Amino acid sequence: MIRPSPLPEELDPGYFGRVMHINGFQSEKETVDTMEKMFGSESVQRRKRTRLELLSSIAGQSVEAFTRAHSTIPLRRAITTYLPDLPHGSPRFKAGFGHLEPERSGAYLCPACVSEDVMFHGFSYWRRDHQMLGQYSCPKHRTALHYVRDKKDFLQFPSMIVEESQAVPTAFADEALNNEFVTRFLDIASEMSVRPASVASTHVNFMIDQRMVDIGMRSWPGETAPCLIDVIQQSFPRNWLLMVSPGFSRENFVQRQFEFLYGRHTRRGERRISNYILALAVLFDSSEEALNALFKASEDFEKMKAATRHHNAKPRKPLGADRVDAEAA
Ligand SMILES: [Zn+2]
Image (cartoon, rainbow, N blue to C red; front, side, top):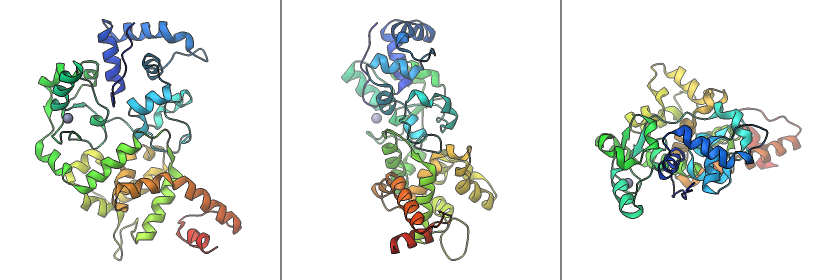
């Protein structure tokens, strides 16, 4: 069996398709069966290996390294209540796929990248960064991406389907491309896409609440301070926002407010990684600041807990007052 090396940012189902074609297999089943015959003996706990595990074996990488470099899991699981310390791709995570943000629909490609790949590699391949939440332009060529609706097309080379693909409307793609908040959103999402593990949502919620206190923003509509959801709505292009976070289309403002901010504490809500990134992109002045705060969130949360323990007080919400106490101590 030929085992091609995965290319930079090559998406896992696209890599699967390439393994299938390069070996002349006629179906997905034949490909999986052959991979299982080759690597099934490595399986543990008498269970079938997942497709990611099989692909990582083909690629000669650990499943964690392959997942981090080639799947959409690191972004979809970037902030979670479910085993946040578990590395992305860990076999222990199998039971927790319900805790992942759903993937976006369709398969996205850039015709200019396809042509360049064919010239350079002799074939084209599917890129993970083109599939990223909120991404509608090629980060390299800055032109509107094309898409097809059927994700089965990931099994084909992009050059085979570029003809039948549709372009994202240029006006829509350009408006997003020229918006600084969208740029910040995409920078934050890109960095989340390559992290080895999640950040606990409890810690991120604490950090966001604290940041809102610090900059005088409110989480609830009021007359004296800007409200997070209003700021988000004013900052991002309306149609782009509706694609990234469909909840914004709801009529009832208070209902939306509640779901946006407090939905994230529920199982259903925690899938909304998009809402977290929208909030981070408007709460901080740069993606670097937002990412620093995000990746320090757990450390800051533990410090706050230790400080409040020192004061013989239980952590409580809202936590602004606790941190003032902690800093004064
Ligand atoms: Zn491109």
